[in-house]
Amino acid sequence: MSLSRLYLKFLGFIYTIAFLSYYVQYPALSSRSGIEPSEDIFREAFPRIYHNMVEKGYSDTDSFVELLNVLGLILSVAIASGVVQHGILFLAVTSIYHFLVILGTSFYTFQWDILLVETGFLTGLCFAPWRTLTLQCNTAKSEQQVGSWPIRFLLFKLMFMSGVVKIQANCPTWQNLTALEYHFATQCLPGPFAWYAHQLHPLLLRLGVAATFIIEIPAAFLLLSPCVSMRKVGAWMQISLQVLIILTGSYNFFNLLTMTMCLPCMVGEESHTGNKKWRRLQHVLCALFLLVACTQMFTMGYTPLDPGRQVIGLKLAITKDGCSLLVERAIPIAVACTLLFTVVAGVRSSIERKSHRLTSTIHTLVCCLCITITAVPFLDLSPNLHEPAFLGFRMKSSTWRSIRRHSSSVSHGYGLFRRMTGVGQLTPDATSTSMGWAGMPPSIVARPEIILEALVDGSEEWHELNFRWKPGGVNNRPLQAAPHQPRLDWRMWFAALG
Image (cartoon, rainbow, N blue to C red; front, top):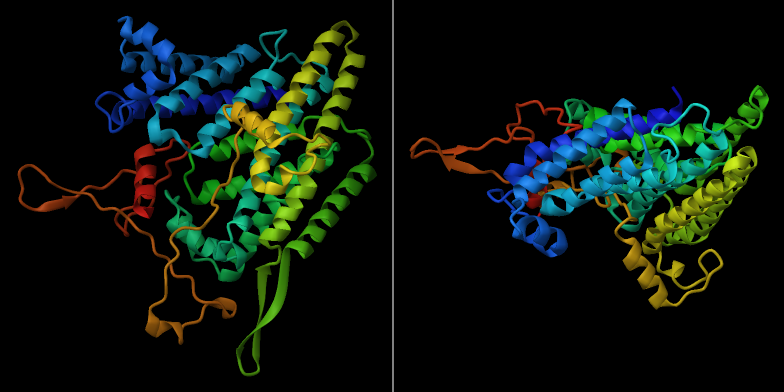
């Protein structure tokens, strides 16, 4: 089975998980008798549909939502099974899920829901087949290459923005590479292995933070390389990061979706298929590129502890201003190169399939338009991107605002774990005597929790209400909730943070 068909099947499977998770939680969260009823949102966000379906008496809100949910589930199962993988089908399940997310109130405002919608939109418009019901084995590889570039660019945007916002937030835990000394204990839903990861030596945890920065920022550029071997290196680095996250935390379908998006990065044809030296040269170039990136992003130095005693410390060297400068210089080049590679693949597709030259040209233009729209949220990373010519075009501020407003429904920015939560403080009497590893203050974990209590069966004694997935008793081992996302448990975590 080709990677392209495997990508479409996996994406259908992820949509199946998303619809199932929504179906079992909607009655308690967003129905008429739920915590946040969606009736008013339905009326305001979709007045015409609400008037035709609800006010005319054809259906009530809950029944209509349930019908759409079941329909989306059936269509996603058809995609996952490989029976039908037409582009219209992907656009249909994406539209349904986008509709359900809007009606899901504050329980469905997470970045992975937005990412799934954006991925489904690009897949249906650019990658999935339109002339056949399923992706045929004889489909031109150059045509698959054209449709792959928008997906690759979306994955690049996800990872690059996730890394950049950590630096721009000026969070001390990211700057000092101590974020993982808090993360495993303070994340919303720790996994069964989170406790063991939290016990690792601080050196390993800080190297893990450094590796995260390398994977999210410099390695993300490998995903946009015109060489398949380089893209594979970048894709496998992203996959390895997602596997480690899955082992230590429960983030529903997000990690599976990110790994699935790596598959189009591996689609392509080597220029020198049988030349091992050429592939090795690409791997060496990748290693040199990442090595240079390490020297620019991190600094090592000796930290004095006691008289005559020093310890080696590792810190983030790139500052907020330096990161903004990187964005201003690298993003226009990345967008321009991606558009160029897409056009080159489109020209090859037109040459290979002379009978479909018109459709290949239209497909290339659509992919270029989608890449441009996908790139719009990069403007939020640096205000200077608004002023200079972006990709050689000078536009007024009002024009940029108009573009942002009209593209916001299909293109979004991302920034996971911008600031680390659960950072505690030393007591005044311990500050002068306590010292963490490498001469830094010790990492004090402070995880806030909201405890709900109730009178059960007429008893006068208050009993704590334990959630199924959210951490409660310290002696209870965390459960693996992913790929399902218990939305109420997540909202309780945010509520405790204030």
